[in-house]
Image (cartoon, rainbow, N blue to C red):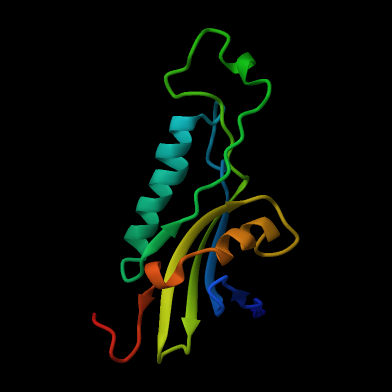
Length: 152
């Protein structure tokens, strides 16, 4: 197995966080039929992902960066029989990412946060536009401290 070194991400708050674990999947990889719509995105691709991530990472807080949403110009061709109960056709970015970030000294004074974000395909692990969103995370308000004196 080859190790992957990821450059630390410098937050707007002025310190670095390190990506310790990441899972990347195609946003609509499990969509067998139809087109994505607003309600489907909210309930399945965002809501369910948030719930599953919170269930998996119970020891860490989970933060969702709200994804960009695109309504195609030709969405009327999908709704030619009137409004659809699940809303307009709407696309999220094609790659869904879940990452565990850590700041500080591992196994000593550190803080962690699990982040869910959506991004376009990229030659880099974190798309530059997604990295800009990640830099704006209010880390001190969201992350959990894991120092020696931190409450459990």
